[in-house]
Length: 132
Image 1 (cartoon, one colour):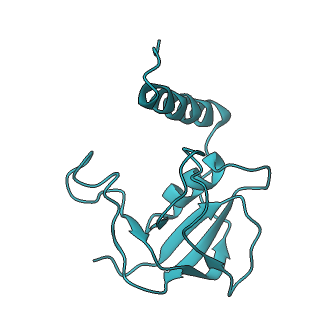
Image 2: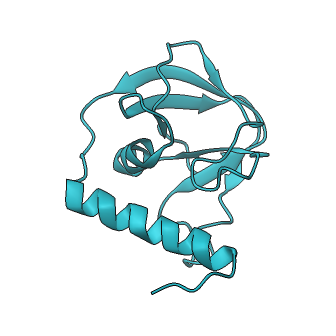
């Protein structure tokens, strides 16, 4: 299992010592309340998540520590990629914020739109809609 450091991307303005916890709506499927909190060992992966997160705040990447057990994120490991190349994890226990990083790679507007379009297509397909 990865030893970190670990990162979480969001638009929430938080402070060192605050916690991220499960029980909130998904950034990618707002109709779903999350049973886990997700994080990665890739700073730029957390940056992408921050830029795609719901809300109006500025995207932020926090350095986090799991407060309990965690596992590979099954949404992107083995189901979609062999192993865990995205170094993505989830936990039902909170994550403690231990810092913030600002030197992550920002996406271009075109790249962000491509990601948003891809996520919209996934949501539409899950609802059984026709996707062009």
